[in-house]
Image (cartoon, rainbow, N blue to C red; front, side, top):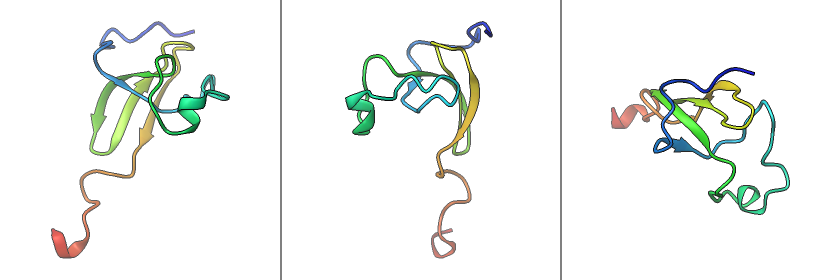
Amino acid sequence: MLPIDPGADLGRRAWVPCPGCRDDHGCGPCAQGRNCAGHWRYLLGTTGGVLHLQCPGCTHLWDHDTGFGAGDRPAHLR
C-alpha cells in the first residue's frame, strides 16, 4: 500500500469511483450520483479537465478525465 500523498488535504475532495478498491459498490447515495460521507477521494490537483486523485481507503493513485476543460468548447464559441 502506498502512503497517503503529503499534498492530500481533507478540504479538497472529489466523489469519483476508485478503480483500485471499488468500495462504493452497493452504496445507495453513490449509485444515485450523490455525495456520501464514506466514498470521497483526495483531490490532489487538476490539469485542465483531468483530476489527480488518491483513495484514502486503499491509497490507489489515478487520474480521472472528466471530459470537461480547456479545448472542449465548440469552435463557434472559441
